[in-house]
Each structure stands twice: as C-alpha cells, then as structure tokens.
Image (cartoon, rainbow, N blue to C red; front, side, top):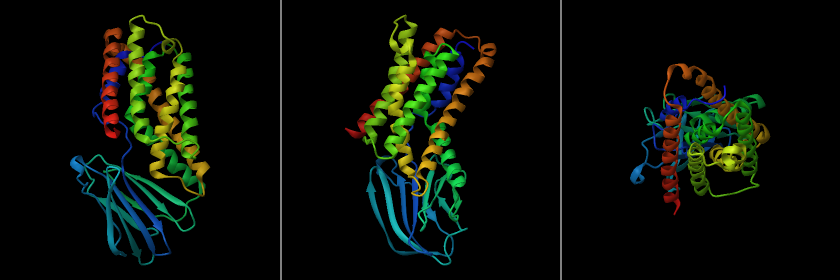
Length: 331
C-alpha cells in the first residue's frame, strides 16, 4: 500500500458526519456515593435540551429503596442537576438500577458508584440497555477492563478526533510516514492526557474543544495546499503537526475522563487502561481505513484527486462549523 484511496475516505467521511454535533462528551451522569451499609448520596445530572428544557430521564431504583427528603435541583453548566439521599433496606449490592426516558434517544449515561472502602464501580449505559447491577468491590482486573472499554468507546464515538486522524491520513503518502504520524499523535495526546488528569496541567474545556476543531480545519487546508503544489512542513513532515495538535487532543480526552473520574485506590491502573483503550480504538479505526482501502481500489474507480479534494473540503467545512459553534458557546 502506498496511499489511502480517497474514495474510501469519502465513504468514511459520510459515515462520520451524519450529525453536525461533534465530540463534546456530554452524557447524562449518575453518581452514587455510599454513606453507610444502606444509605447513598445521589447526584443525577442530565444535559439540557434546546431552550434549556430538561431531558425526560429519571433514575429507577429497586423496590427496597426510598428517597430521604426532597431532591435539590439546579441548572448548572448547561445541565439539570438533582441531589438527594436514598436508603436501601439490605443495601444495593446485586440490585439493578435503571434509567427511564432515554430509550430511543442518543444520550448515554455514565454511572459512578463510590463505595465505603474507596473503590469505584464505573458503567456506561446506552439507550438500548439503560440498566446496571450494583456490584461489590472489584479487583484490579475489573477496574482495568472497565476503563479499557471506556477508552475504546470514547475514541470511536469521538467524531472530531477521528476526523483529525482521517485528515492526517490524507496527508500520509506511505506506510513509514503513516507509522511516524500515528506514533507522534499517540505520544503527544498520551502526555497531556496524563498531565491533565493528574492535575499538572489545567485549561478550560470550551476553548480547548474550539482549538481541537480548528486543528481539523488546519490539516484539511494543508491537504488542499499539497494538492495545489504548495509544499509545507505539514506535507513534508506530518508527524510534527500530529504531535503538536495531539497535545490539544489529549486535553480533550482528559476532559472526557474527568466526567467519570478515577477510582482513588486504582488511579494508575485506570489511567493507563483508559489510555490503552483510546490507542486501541484509534488503531482499530486506522486499521479499518487501511484494510478496506486495499479492497476499495478495485470497486471504486473514481478520480482519486477529485475525491480527495472533495473530502478535504468537507472535513474542513464541518470542522469550521464546529469551531464557530464552540467559540460562540463560551464568548
């Protein structure tokens, strides 16, 4: 393989841009903090709909559970939030908790259960299966598996991160350049993911998300410039740009991880496995592009130059829209 067929990239772009909403990771969030053997403090947060309307989603606890007092509601950071305490006779271990009102929608739910011993149960519920079972304290293997899956799901659901990788692939001319470019991107966002998650680096999320979108516009423009014969360091050494913007994308990954938090007793394991999951998902995406590319050459006899230019303009246009949308959200 010497190049990635632009025809295949066009198909992938259509799949990735079915929605104009980029990867601003805003799931609903349920946190259960254990107070004693039967009492829990509950935080339930759902993203606001247009006009600040509340998403019609609620938590359904098992029949042995009752609420203590009245829920305390507030509207914060474009989300509706409720706090209340519950008591579960006999405890919640091995009991099922479900979320009603998201079936058929597009909102996932991140669940975090903080146990008395400091361990954490982490779940990601999808509208097709919005139920989970409260479990006893997990071992290191269970923590590792949970954060590995979360990392894979985040990158594969992160349309803007994947579009950035896709734009980089348009710049890459051969396998060696591909390896160098992906490695540089991986190293860079791994550095900032760790630094931001551990609190060594702190930047506000909205500007970071806006610059991430702008980075996609930049790379898409560089693809066009290359086709026009305007040589640049980006075209000659795409790994340099991949590393530079990878630092920003790592901050975006850290923002997603901040949404769910890290278990106090297994921070290194959880952080490592989330990062491994991100890398695994990214490699799956790249492998899918490269693997199907070999087959597409036979079945999509289109002009590679024209399609490549069209795809680049499409990527840049979508990313420009995201940039404007994200900037408008915080100015």
